[in-house]
Length: 365
Image (cartoon, rainbow, N blue to C red; front, side, top):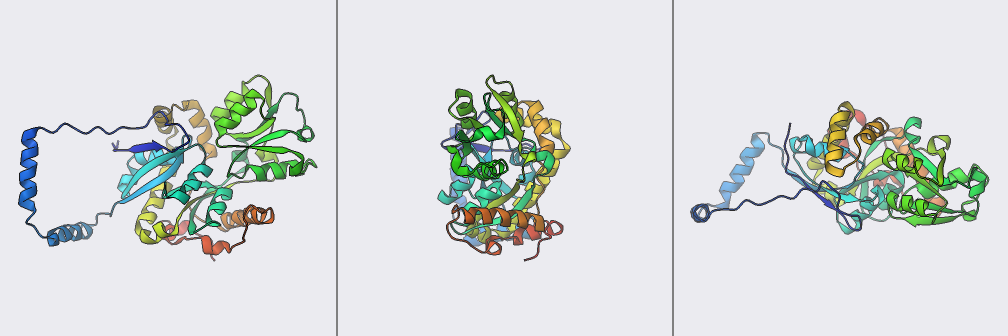
């Protein structure tokens, strides 16, 4: 098994999770220090031409150039952790650091302040990012199936028995995510306007859970076995429906700054190849992934095994992925979430993906 030197950090305002790794520096004896200084003095007379020659020899020997990259992540996503733990990032020349957030949308927002280099999320936060600056969607990570959509569950207070009773209620959403769109589509199906309810924004799913538990909100869409199991056992609330019974289906993708992609086309191609490989490895080795997630973030093993089949990462870019983005963009423009419309094709940079996984890029501009 690959061993790796890994740094995982938690981004504010989320708490540092269990599983952060601290790298300790070894104590260096004085005799070794003196020897090292002697070597430095000896080498100081060498010209920079020697270093250039060494780099050139490395390139001629076929060694990949290493790309340092900060990746926005969340506790419940195993894909990037698998790529680190199994040496997949290292094999592809990626020196990765995971920066942990409360939701994918928070990670996407971190691009704006250069806290991370790449982020992942649903269509909504990706489109929000590319509408605000020089950012590009560099890959799709797949589209939700009907089965996967069942994992998005609507929990409500026990006194609410039907969708129609949600009118005038306080409903939770995670800021920067597609959930207001989900509420809008679901409520319209039951003849309720979004203006007929009060949306209460939270920063992460844990906050929605607490708000529902304390009665501060009347309903919340939540995702994942851990939270769903907790809410299923919570007195005073019950599951009303799930997303598979609505018309909403999610697309997911990866976004990065155009400047970072343009400066590192080879490295980005290697990164995408590594992520795709890690996604396949995770699906093929659920028990290993469950052990890893328990070790690093204390996620129950049974929850990981239950969630994995509904969350496959398969990188590529298809016409279906494009259509999903187009539909979501129209909603965001029509409702003033995106203030100025833009050409979606101009916000796609698929060249590194095409180089890494040519057979998986079937969309043509």
